[in-house]
Amino acid sequence: MSIISVPQEFNQDDLYVDLQSIFGRQLFLKCEGFNFAGSVKLKAANEMVEAAERSGVLRPGSVLVESSSGNLGVALSIIAASKGYGFRCVTDSRCNLATRLLMEALGSEVHVVTEPDPETGYLGARLNYVRSLCASDKRYVWLNQYTNDNAWKAHYRTTGPAIARRFPELDVLFVGAGTTGTLMGCARYFKERHPSVRIVAIDPVGSVSFGTPAARRMLPGLGMNVRPPLLDEGYVDEVLHVQEADAIRTCHRLARRGFLFGGSTGTVVSGAMRWLARHDARDLTAVAIAPDLGERYLDTIYQSNWVQDLYGDDVLGDDVLDTRSTAARAA
Ligand SMILES: Cc1ncc(COP(=O)(O)O)c(C=O)c1O
Image 1 (cartoon, rainbow, N blue to C red):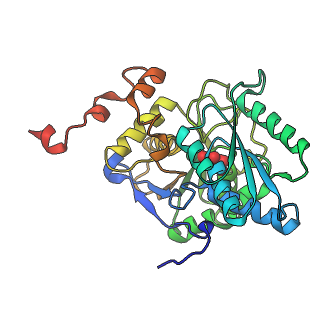
Image 2: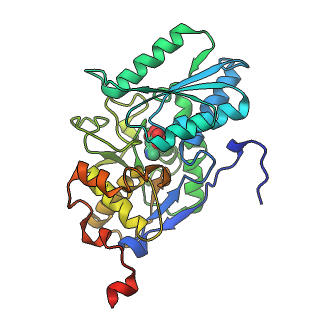
């Protein structure tokens, strides 16, 4: 039994789903969505806030400001509410409605940027807005998840060791790349402590993080329009790019077996299954990280109109759209 007095104290760090029965290949999916923020970003948020408190940058009366596509914003909303700080989240029009409402329910102020910067896109426009806010008031503190080393240190300290403890024989680890905090923390930990573990980064097609060309991306969480400052490719063995349509198909396949995950999990699982299919993976121990759960995406990834408008009528395929029960299909 756990008894807590502040929301950020609770995090389920030891839950894995074996995907063998769904995809026919063994992959242990580490679920990071079981905490009060509903995502892996609680770890980075906690570590960044605590470091800022220790250094004296964050003090009573401070107001946090951050650019987030959603999940870090929710995590910071929870921590700010619990510790008595203000919080202004700067996001853009791709942020899910549910995520925005969640932040507001927790007492945060949400600024939605509606026009992308002509050169640096929505992220650039968000960062410009954050800079102008910070210049306007001395109480504002920007932790900057894109450059803050504490974001990756959170995973070096917790996620990497938790996986190594549970899977001492680990061969390959699949991690999605957003700001690359999760990727770099895990990669640094394994390269230092268990260097035989292969680190495979999963990036959406259209992200420029690993030098590939920019293109439209609609799923929040993974991928960047600028190169992530935290990324050091020297720690990454391989990079796989995944189409958003494949990620969505994978999400629906999981959902039809009762596992409702977010789009970044669909991306990582899709890439991991492709990698496992290409390698002789029968005797390999493989783990992938699932950053959040699916409820925040009910009006996007899990809405057939939204999916078909963006990715075409056939994107989900018959097996996914067939909603009849197994017994009915067999009859
Ligand atoms: C749903 C989701 N998946 C993946 C990530 C990527 O994590 P990181 O920024 O540590 O690369 C994020 C980051 O916000 C996220 O919200």
